[in-house]
Amino acid sequence: MALGVTGGAKSHLRLLDRPAPFERSRSDAAACHPAQGLRRRPVLYIGAEPENRIPFTRIARRWPTIKLLLSPGAEEGLQIAIDRRLRMVVLDARLPGADAVVLTRSLRARAASPSAPIVILAGDNTSIERARFIWAGANAYVFRPFAATEVDRTVGMLLEASAIG
Image 1 (cartoon, rainbow, N blue to C red):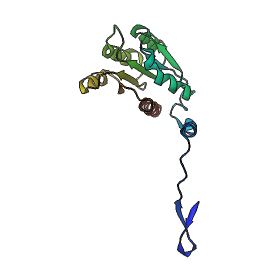
Image 2: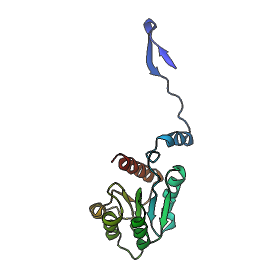
Image 3: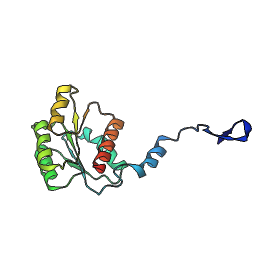
Image 4: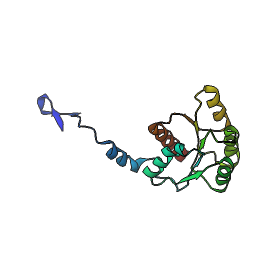
């Protein structure tokens, strides 16, 4: 609804409407999500703790083009990454019996293409730990406690960047 001004000319100002409910805006955004235009390559989650999978299972449910693969351990996850062409790898840094930095380096060198982002879910928010993973080949480092919106934003940004590159 435009507001009139003197002289009969119309202004380009609009009255602000009440914001739409969150569910509606989320469904409206589905058509422009970066995952929409990509081929159906899976996202691999490597982690033993089921509660850390929750943000990614929610993302996979919300965006039907994302197929989520789950691996409970480092060896199985590395083998899946070698066998399949992945869109993204999400690695829980607290894998029991595995060095996550070495696994990140192996994923980057042997399995993940340069355009496939690697996201680290970590419990330690120190700059030294973050730098170790980034130098090993990770693209993003998200620390606990995980906020679903932060994880969703990080995944969306990395999917968009990998789609462009």
